[in-house]
Image 1 (tube, rainbow, N blue to C red):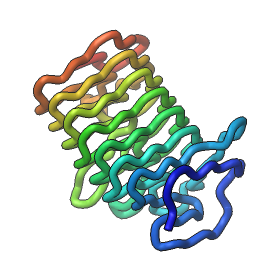
Image 2: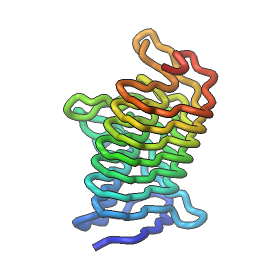
Image 3: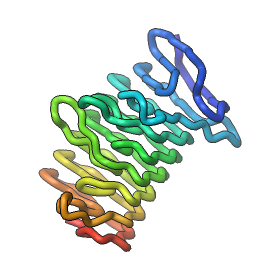
Image 4: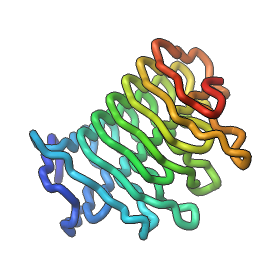
Length: 220
């Protein structure tokens, strides 16, 4: 069984490791409670989906208290309503995602159906839209979906498409603080693009964010 912390120093995941709890190939799936997956000192491991497989970069599912810290996650593509999210927290309460670079995926960082998530200190850029079954859209940047009492703080989100760099949807009691949000394109085919958007959510605190240099609507 895997527990505690795993420190990873490899530049690119190419290892074929398969256990009941953690699988590493070009993607990582975590189902272990209270696991910390962290880059080793001085390392910045890269997970590269190479746009050729319907998979998630790092998928935390059904586990409480997982931390993902210090990775580059890029080029994961949604195919036939499957995969495409760089870091996906699914039914994963009290997860922490920090100090990662998430770029060029169909979706950046998504917390769905798991409360008390903390998403902080990440760079999330140039992610374009995909979708998840059953038809739930994956928005380009950082998304909270049905994720109550979660915090999105001190992230840099830019160049992400469809709805927003940061989106809060049906996620009450969220805190969106100290983020830098910019470079949202305005496209005739995607008038819904926004830098930051809060929808169908109550008691959401939005403060001290820097929102600038957007062609689309800056905040809603």
